Length: 329
Image 1 (cartoon, one colour):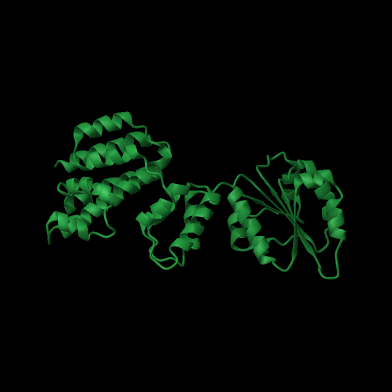
Image 2: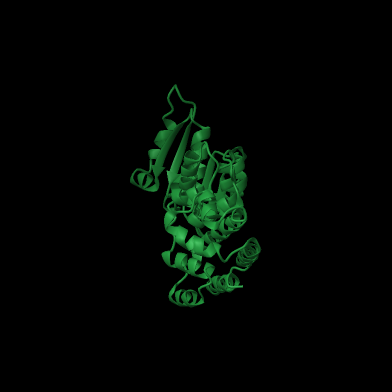
């Protein structure tokens, strides 16, 4: 019986049969299912095998199923790296499974796979394809894991995705770190960047500073000599937005005091190495200009999300040039 993975994630009791096959390229999702089944069956003996164990001893499953002690009514058996090599063993042992449960975990299985075909056609077995996550499913995972944390914003979510991509294994590790670190305080994007050890492209930081200073010559030279990493473009946009938002804040603070004093008041504080750049940029940017620039970054973000085939490198270059021009208006 075929099941949608997201439905089983929400409710494993939908697996009515005593045998289930989880397969696909999403290793992180498969690991989550293992953990979920384990957590829900803490009082039951769970035996764990890999396919090679069964190939070395084809009777091992029969022996374990038949070897029920007075202290246990049933067992749960995990088999990792399952493939067609153990199809005959699995098919035969399922006839004697009784109250026990067997969960098989596999990588990608082609349509012609005997193991996959058997589980798909059998009404006495469950099968759950584990396809790669998309941005929507990753966002849901983040929101669910961080539901008890305060300060969740779109920017925070985008920062996490930019650092982990659609890799669920890496995402789960990073989310565990975030929950521990921000246990008793609001999520802060700058602290989050440091926690996740995001390595910022130094060349991009130079381009950002040059553009925000309105330095046409330096911006053009840097744009011509820099290769943008396409998978980091969401991170680049995040970096630009952070700086623009701070420039917007400093513009309002400087209305009540001089610029240098206002910079000392801004929270979180400007890193000391960035202060000279920030001071020079703050002299050029007012609230109106920062709003226009933020609107440009937002529009670019929408274009990138709606058109996967578009040339992202050209668009990020154009954005930096537009910002440079806007700085000088």
